Amino acid sequence: MSFHTDATAQVTDASAADTVTARGVLFDMDGTLVDSTAVVEQVWGEFAARYDLDIAEILRTSHGVQAGDTVRRFAPAGTDVVALTAELGAMERVRTDGIVALPGAAELLRSLPADAVALVTSADRILADIRMGAANLAVPAIAVTADRVTRGKPHPEGYLRAAELLGVDPADALVFEDAPAGIAAGVAAGIRTIAIGPNTGPLPDGVLHITDYTAVSVTTNVDAAGVRRISFRF
Image (cartoon, rainbow, N blue to C red; front, side, top):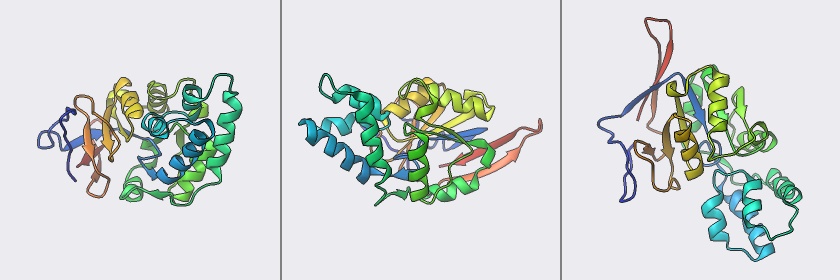
């Protein structure tokens, strides 16, 4: 698995940081564990067509963000944002064709201690259950969904809440994210963040990039103080 750099990204060199150790692991869902691109683009495409909006701009800014925030940003003045968000959510819940796990995601989740993993997603709990199920992935026991936070990504509330529920300090956690809003949330929470996939945008200083999970290896050990630590090699 390789690390990625481009002209606009500042990424720690893999040779100096190819192993990361954590006590808790926090995953975004869409684009990070689950590839739901086809469904997302279909639903937002219908939204854009209804109001004659720029679908490219909507897709550029909506990834990783709560649906209600995107509706509020783009819908015409006077729109019932709550009702329209609920309508779009209902559409997403019945569309699962093409949803699959990212390469290596299932194997990685199985290799981690269950009580060290949390899901932090901008989807609500119902949609999270549907999409994870469609991808044949189990939802972690700790899942911080859109209905459990007051401020969505890029605000760090969700990641800070998940670290608290896992009982780990943010400095001892690791975030996997695919979208600029989610990456910003992880960084703002003070949590080491790994960017995954092709849609990360320019990366903050020190954020590592991976293509998928196929070459990630994990080992779990207990140190002399009796503290369990999970080491990831990329």
